[in-house]
Length: 387
Image (cartoon, rainbow, N blue to C red; front, top):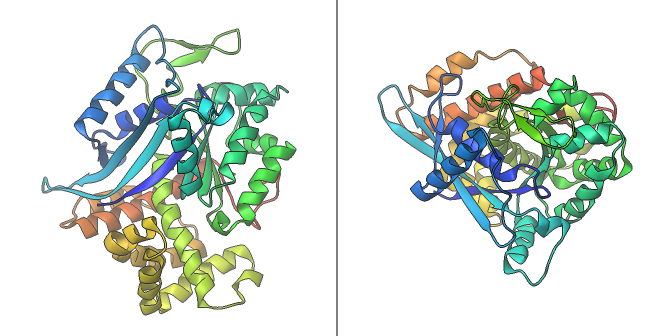
């Protein structure tokens, strides 16, 4: 089936390749707390395993991506049921490349042009913020935003949904920082604030902007050297933290983005209603007009490759998502994730597996947002300093 394309943005050494290797290791086998896993083509699986072995080795870290190298990794999301059957309802592709193509573009390099074209065409962008540079930024070092200005200029050429992934979160957590505090500090910088404000006011802004803290190695595998730059391994085994959250968010954002587009086609007046009530009205409207939803999906599929994916493979899951949002936005109640996961593992078809994944992802994201207040920023629900 077609894959959902995602482009990962970040300057050199921000952790793009290590993040993808960690994501694969975290999701390569079904785990009790997740219930799903991912599969890659054999060659890609072998390459990411080798990178992860370098991460876990006691000496050096993996070398940065060479400027002339570019890789596209296809993660197929799979559910292995209690009946030992495997269903694979969707895939996500990640483009990986040298960050120098963004901060030091060279028009003579063919791969650089491919990267820039992919950014412009992307519907989903993950901007990686190097946690070590974020820590220095909190202490007054401006180099983080200097790197990001070039990235922001490329990012604004895309109409895609944008989220910020804060890598090396173990460094920031060890210093006692929270997502809320880091986000508030970043938004005090005029370049960062204006960029996020522009994103929130764009047609894609209804899904909000996420600030997702991840650690590709976990909280206890490495520590920041006294030089304030180098990460030193302490030994033991990595325990990747939150690396699956951006993966889950892509599917949920895909559905929410086109739920908003559906509402805009329904008629005028929705924009004047307070944001949370507005979102609830969207889903109630959609639930009552299932034929309209199906018509919308068919029309949108003619304009967007990603929406062709929804129309051809995810229509029923999208309709179920519409219905579930009615209660989700009306009342934030703690979800029984174990029950949702167990229900997904009883799936007897790819459709049931996808419906189960949608419910599970939504619940896991709600749990994540409760654990990290301020991680999701939606215009009209938050101020620039509180969430």
